[in-house]
Length: 164
Length: 302
Image (cartoon, rainbow over all chains, first blue to last red; front, side):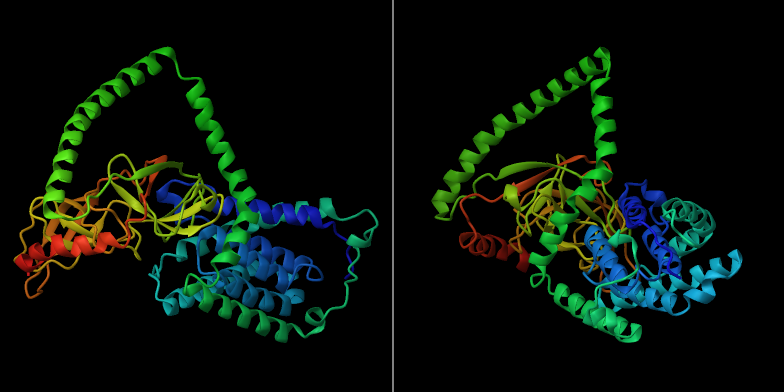
């Protein structure tokens, strides 16, 4: 279990995902922007649960809330809950074949979207109905390539003394 | 290297079971949301965190700013000359209009003096650029590159060269968030320029559409009517153009008309906006004069 990793490459992937989350896009494709930050979080929780856990999820959620001008805690709540579930089942999910893992990610992203939907509904903001679905679908479709990329990052950042 | 080991410092939070941890975090998140819902309680926290995250925004917007700068600097002489001619013509036209403005303002001040009401002075403007970052795709929010350190405050009206853009909703010290008039949570008091019929324009969530849901079926409104700010509510100064009426639908059996309007400001193309600074704190006097001067048309309309 103890696979020493360097923390900096992991941080870089998080910052990149957050940055892509606020990069200006044409209005027509804005609704298709994948929730990359959540996907990166799910990946690192699966692969490095000793370091990337609930506190990371909460902090990431707060950062996203501020950058997106949303209610403070909205993403933090959703990401914490999803991280808990991922942590709980990470040993099973990790050995899933790719298609099963992708389906799991679909379920997790759906859960994030639903939690935000509920919060916005209770908060009395305009919920966008099914507006979040395209993002979830795009995120799921992009999971295999994103995971391949992050696997590469992980292999690069494992220290030589690793016994994995 | 200590960083690379999985050993962690012991702590109460880390030692708790994951279930308890997530429960605690959820409670904290819910408390945060409840407090943040009443905007003012967490504005300090939000502001300091925003300042910490400012570099991320800078990093994202830098390439876009750079590409603009490059495009500006490699513009050909011909393009620049054409642009220069166009701008000079525009300036000429506007100067000509301003000459009349001065005369009208003087006349307005004299008439107001006769009526013994306080004169409304012109506003100061602060030019701000839009930071190239996207916010929540479901909301119509923008980030401008001026914040509390430049005197920007929450509720400050934002306009562009053509009309009203929105208002500042959050101060981030170096930058500020503004809500556009088309946001689903935004409503702006307007009047029809032609007959001073007052109503409220509500955002639709789409950048090119405002809704006027509160005009009765017999209201005097026509397609193409210009809507200007009425000054009621005290947030927006009166007289700025907001939108033009695009489509009027009257639904049989419904007491109110369903009216769409197109914002006159270029909400999806603008790069610079103007933040209006009120002068000399006219706050106490202004609502009173508004009430006095606007009460008659209201009765006529009703």
